[in-house]
Length: 231
Ligand code: DX5
Ligand code: ZN
Image (cartoon, rainbow, N blue to C red; front, top):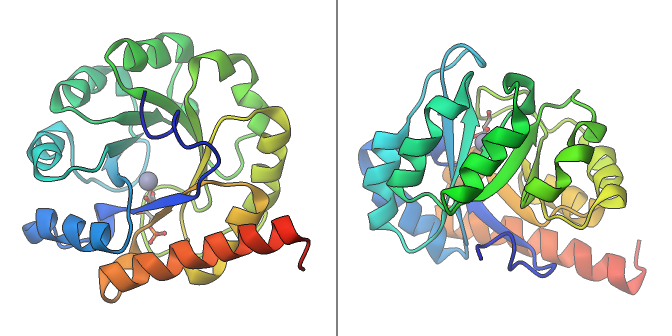
């Protein structure tokens, strides 16, 4: 049982370390943890699926022992099957793959789960929610990309709130959202039904503990207002 399976409708969040200072990664992660982060989002890019190149399982293996929080690997790569065993060995808690880059999604998700991690799919902004329908039994969460994957610091694509609502009609699986999340957009996605918020530049633009806390408070406030029928 991992974070996603045990959420029970709570709203949680974590930093995307893409926006952190990699020379001080463990400290950067700790700062966000002090602001209430409950996971660490780890972005792997390959300069093929996306036009950027970042970090892989070697860095994950160094980071996992440095934090008590679950490390959530988001693989924006072609051929993720080649990397999944090394990420599992590194001890990450969850792995999401981009279905646009995967031919045999069932096999890929089973590989993640059989290695003891939670399995997710990350949907590009124009990828239809229906693509997950036959994968639902093999999934622990769905990641809605609210920007085009590849870079931090982009603007939230507003239609993604509707995608979150559509997914909520299809499944009770927790929905994570990634891209352009800040104090303002966190309330929009939380109200739409997302329960795991990832934020990179909005956390590391200032004091990570304070920024993380503001994002979570705004999301929780929106959920509270929605449940009380306040518009
Ligand atoms: C984008 C990555 C995100 C990114 C988010 O491809 O998947 O995790 O770091 O960055 P912000 O929060 O700055 O949009
Ligand atoms: Zn990501």
